[in-house]
Image 1 (cartoon, rainbow over the protein chains, first blue to last red):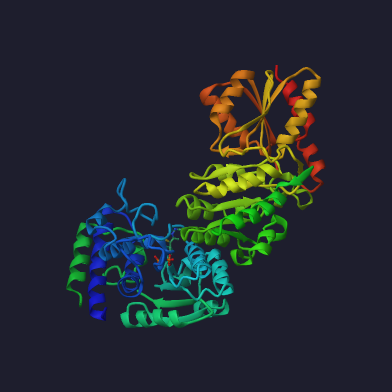
Image 2 (cartoon, chains in turn yellow, blue):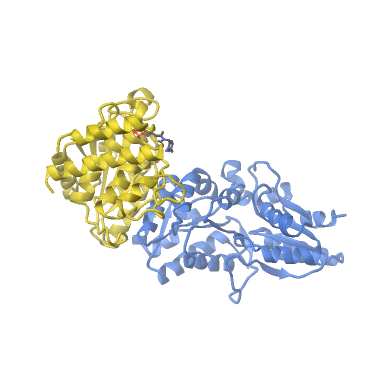
Length: 273
Length: 307
Ligand SMILES: Cc1ncc(C[n+]2csc(CCOP(=O)(O)OP(=O)(O)O)c2C)c(N)n1
């Protein structure tokens, strides 16, 4: 898919994210919007999947380790055809297939349950180990938050991935610089994050996480990197695409009211592509 | 004959690994103690040492399970269920993944290693997680069958194993049935419901009581969740008095589970034998069982203390 097609899809996903969160009056817009472009490239250009057969054995796997960005993943899955886009507005509602945090038992297309930060990379390692054991060539992708990597389990898993040479595993760090209580730099610095992963035995690629060509190329480079796992450190903007949300820590977990929703959707509709 | 349940676990894993190629084993640098090293020797490709990273081990096991593997993840009970509690809850229990947590060195009979290593809360922790099955086998043969049964059951299972050798109560003719307690001795005066290493001790107590003219029913409650409600009510009706015995805190374990059932369905007096809301310490298993009132004599005394 070319860059313009991907941009168009990403824009539609962002609009759905805003509408879903506004309808639920609950959810995490900032971190959903920052990883939307990455999800778009994965699901519409790179991943080998069959939306009509979500549990297909040989599919590429995806784990949203920063599970609170579920609205972006749900909107992506719906657009890709795993379930109807109409279901998106049921987010968080009682009995919905869309739980606030990803529940693999509720939602078609989810490969792992997440929401408690720090746990997804381990699960991705398990999937990658199973792939090696079964001599299958599926790939495993996982998106991590930058605040999330403050969890110790991430580094346990980072060691596991390198030790078992999980070159079928690609992690993508949604490096938007913000978490809940402020900037990573204020709360607890994660820097130098590239050096840390290198020291843990990973291949590290740094990109602009909103540049579709760079995202694609990085995923291809990860695929051709043998003998070690790859992490793509994607510099992103929290709240990307909605001017009043961009880089605002306050939009981490706040739902837009009706006026804000309209403004955000108008802005997204007017944006390029 | 006697053997530690962890020894039986190591052997059972090898047997299971032969039968079922989907079985994989994970350990966190304790494979010689947990006996998963036996599996590693037999099937090196299907064994993963995750290093001293219990949280990562549980998450990795979860990921393997999503791809159709049947992972057995082992460490000492305190680290498996304590350090990695929330990983077990959120990455295994909630998605109902087919992971078996087989933890050894449960209870105070760990001995010399002392309180930091003596898990007395693990049953309570695991029992509280929806979807989790909890099994505490009493001897080698029961362990073997419980491991095979756990692999057959789809979903998370916690299997509690010990370090210390325990007498063999069961032979090859025994049929372990998940969720169904076993009546090993029948008597009309009192029911002793025991689990794990306390089953053989309860049997000794029953022998002693018999000499004194008291006939005790002894139940081996190997599955603590789902608990065999029917059997508990039945023995309570027959005897009117119940004693529970476990090498675990009296808070949240077998004693609590039995009281929950009886208070709802058939209230009778229950006395709980277990670790009395206190930490363990270093010592030999024998010394510790005595100090913490987990001997057959203690059971006898408690039985006789009913008015
Ligand atoms: C283990 C755990 N602790 C705390 C939380 C609450 N929480 C949800 S999102 C979040 C901040 C995440 O920051 P980051 O990983 O940078 O995500 P992003 O900024 O991309 O949304 C926290 C602390 C959680 N979900 N899990």
